[in-house]
Length: 283
Ligand SMILES: C[S@@+](CC[C@H](N)C(=O)[O-])C[C@H]1O[C@@H](n2cnc3c(N)ncnc32)[C@H](O)[C@@H]1O
Image 1 (cartoon, helix red, strand yellow):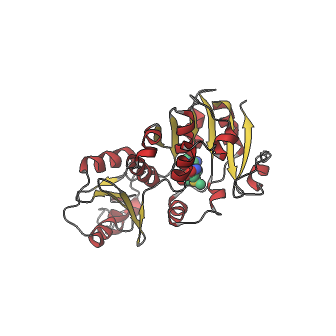
Image 2 (cartoon, protein in one colour):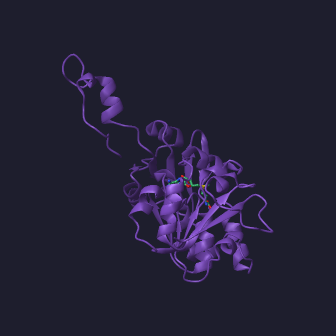
Image 3 (cartoon, protein in one colour):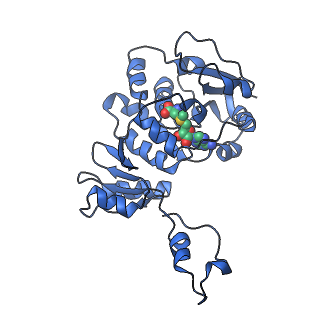
């Protein structure tokens, strides 16, 4: 469970000088970000590992049914791990962890098709890729397959990072090797990029939330609810160009208003009418 920031102020105390009940509830026991637990086939070790890694709260299932877990989570999402699947229960809906369209893209790539992202970034074997907006990890999966190398995936939302980590571990065989190359870190890319040395990866990918407004589907509803929505700032793009050896690929929705705001020109493309890419060379 994450800890409250800051200390106590006098106004937090009741007449007795003791913290008031409201303060105790709101500040000493802040809401959990996500409850991580198991189905009967799941491993509590994994629940604990994900909770520790992403700052969430692991609780043993203790025979509780979903409504009891919902009550215990007090509005926070609940990640339920079973052997073969992972589900996130949030606001009355259950979302099964998956890489969305990423799996179909991977299957097509295995059949010899070149994915539009791979073509736009000119990804090749052994390239090291930093996916700075991991989301459901569809792009990261396709990149890991194309490069046969490690992909670092940064995700600002701890809940999404845990959900996607659990999902990638359970991916069906055709995707499992590529999924194993993705290293997920829960971090804000604005801070993470500032700390990275010059020219430390080949390509940086950005797919910020401005594009996702056009996406539909249950999993994208979930991403929209949990994601970081801040637009990509020009200074972050500059940092990424410093960190990249070859360049930075930015995704946008047509006609590319966000690319224009960042001073990028959409790359010509014959496919993907729902996506435009912009490329910024390394600095
Ligand atoms: C549109 S989704 C990315 C989808 C992804 N390309 C895929 O294939 O599944 C954008 C993701 O980037 C994350 N994000 C946005 N700003 C971020 C930041 N500053 N640092 C890290 N992650 C960020 C959001 O939380 C969200 O999950």
